[in-house]
Length: 490
Image (cartoon, rainbow, N blue to C red; front, side, top):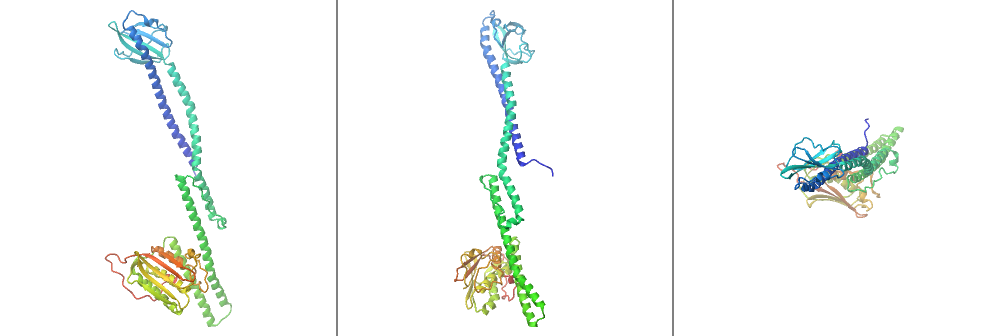
């Protein structure tokens, strides 16, 4: 794999490069501005020197003021229009100033720079003025040594401070980038540790998969990323815990019928038996196989719901008919125990949904009501429209559910401890399946119960008008007298 620089190194180099380019550009601009201002100041000084000298020379052509001047680093010449030297200062012992062959403007001041002269680098101003009816040219030159020294000092300072600034910038950027990316490094380390713990035995022994990171900077991107990782890790840990618990409970629930099947099969094969004994054994095996089938179908339904793949049909139907059919299916069981089913159903309720799963949903609550209701009691089934919603409620006169158990009744394989209730039939998946079906239909389930006062389960579904515009309503059919595989998986 091609080795690349770390994100910290790339960010540091980028930051240092950008700052270096900006510093260099600012330095060049400031150097150009300094040089321009220094030369402008020198030109101003030349003009200020030339003004009084020209004023003194203008009225008296016989005056020899220029010849008498001898100022250090300042040189004077008086020229006629033919560039002949009329006067010059005493410090021009090495010869006249060579102002060059460029034409002279007799009306305006001119500035020139003499880079090679016997007196060093000079800045020259040519000032034309009138003297006794003739045009004269006053030439004043000053050494640029002071300006050049300032610029050299500035360049030397730049060569020292620019690399030092870049070094300090690189160090500061490395510190700041490292400090800013430290939460990302912590996230990476903890995510790697969590990935190792997912498949290790330590996570199953009670050790947490993730220890939340402090999100001190909650307003920036890294702070929000930290919070997101914390939430994600909490959900992953909760999902894994639920999955392990589910697998443990499922294996425990499946172990009992499998053990019964294995034991009864060994017992039947151990020695010859009478036909009646074999029939009893086969009945027991069939009962256990039915339990296994219902449990497997329930687990399949829940797994599809967990994966978001539980697809329900959306067909026009009458909800009161589906509920009436469900009641008729359990009527023989209710009559065998002397239990009365009272139905208070709003008639002709059009709805759009999956008839098979809706019937399974209603049968789950009817089955639970029958299991936990005492003989000669009453189960009340209601269907009503309220606040634009459909509510189907199932009330029994059973032992009820304690408040400490109500938050857990929709968990898989959870059973409320009861006396006299046969719980071997459901396997503990009925209410979990009911909740999954209700959610897929866009509904919710509520439970009101208290010990000794019975229980009432209410399914609230969004009201659907049934057939689409222009579509005929569903035909009313006679109540079904058989169950489907989904209905048997209570």
